[in-house]
Image (cartoon, rainbow, N blue to C red; front, side):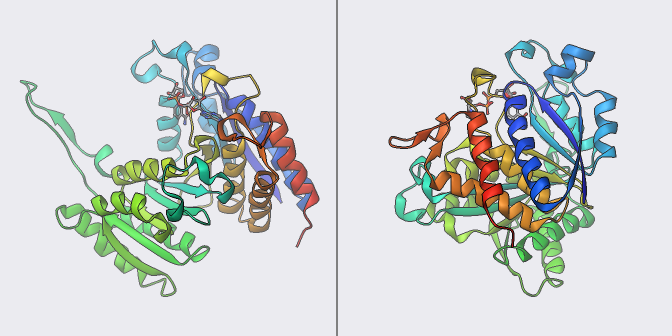
Length: 360
Ligand code: NAD
């Protein structure tokens, strides 16, 4: 199979971690007989330096022409003085909207080997955690009508959802649940908000097409509490843009390691943009210190969600687990007694594990 991928290394540690993601994809392609077609594009600070805009039209066109996008991270102190549409981060918002990416997947996975990084009590996370937050990305209060009064003494934002917006994100959540623990929790505030009542009713209608999946509902305030009280109860959480923004950050923090967590932003079809959840970490850029695992796991998500290559995706995830089990750690996840490695060595160890493991 040909895997046509638009690659945006971006700024700071972006190029460091993307190299390791590509290394791992190279091993996967070799082992499973796929052909890789990478095209490289600028976005963020690197695009500002070269072309004076954070998101060049050529990048948007190149991404649209590919089957999937792999992004490192953008931004850094060099461009902090810029404001408004010139900020490097505008490239992220611009890409999401230009590419129609309405569904954000943020897995919060705590590997049992890294449980000491988790701020929760040991008995709450025994055996690790594996939660998938499915967040609606292009609707709700962040995109609703807003305004401020002339005297500046009052302001408003509007939360609005249509049935079709809820349907498409609910379908994604149920499809993902079918491949996991067959449980969906829909998070809303249906005791107060009209838009939440429409959300809940629509999710229930979609659920009828997935009789094998158990659907439950929770108010957002309770969900925020339950995530730290008993996180193992969760499998797939589907929620609105704002609730998902807050809950996915909370879920990722309970895993304790920003360098480990991948993400995907998807369209209705197979197209998606894949990126680590962390930023460009300018403090460690180019020093061979960045943890490439979040990016490597983003590549696994790409194999699964854009190319439907489940065995290939699982082989990458298994390779990451094996390398962690063998005790290799980058600085951000290092603890006493472990083997300290840099970005490149971590990438090579994971790539080598893919070579070592037998194909099914
Ligand atoms: P950050 O995530 O870049 O860094 C926070 C801390 O985590 C730093 O100490 C950093 O060294 C560490 N860290 C991050 N990723 C790591 C990794 N893979 N391995 C080891 N350590 C890692 O967040 P920040 O410092 O708030 O932001 C830095 C820049 O990144 C800013 O310009 C910000 O706007 C931008 N940013 C970009 C994105 C994105 O591109 N998606 C997301 C968040 C922040």
